[in-house]
Amino acid sequence: MTSLSNHDHDDDGLELRDIIRADLHALQDDLADDLADDLADDLSDELSDELNWCAHPAPGSVAIIAGEDRASCQGVRAVLNEMGIDGLIVEDGHDALLYLQRLGTVALFVTDLIVPGKDGLALIMEAKTLDPELPVLALAGGSNPELRLHSARVRGADHALARPFSRNDLIAAVELITGEVTSDSEFTSA
Image 1 (cartoon, one colour):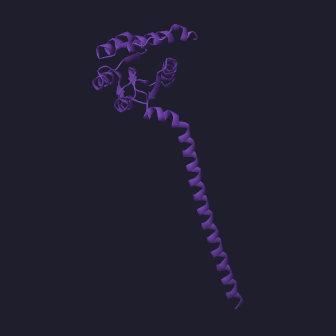
Image 2 (spheres, rainbow, N blue to C red):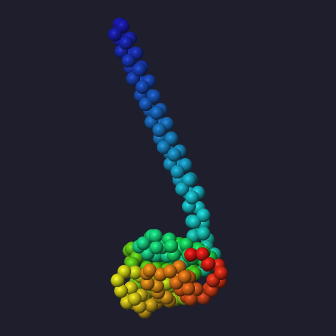
């Protein structure tokens, strides 16, 4: 009889372990869900400002910047921001066209002739098809950029810059094609 009683006690122990194990798994799932929610909230807070102006930009206050070299795009964006134009860097040519369609009025479209997902020359033509009045600045580097930049102008770019170009070259090009002149005194720092 004692062996039966011990067996019942072992079953109770197994049952208790199973209950504890199930409770631990439920607790782990709850903690994982809470952690995922917290991370999503943090990410949402970090991106909310940028996403807000993308969703509700002031008409004509945004420039779309497309290119394969992120550092170069960030440099262009920094200068545009100094000029009072918000720069939105896009990952590829398809995204550039998508943002051009969604945003409607855009202050400027800056594109490298090498853009992931789409040929830069084709991108210029498609952008101009969407908005024939869109100011387009084409950028190119490497060997013989002048020939490629000439092709960009033929396909609709309003101005073109060969790399390397200076900050002042970029400012002058943006002022030329947007018609917005920025006081030289505002840009005295290099």
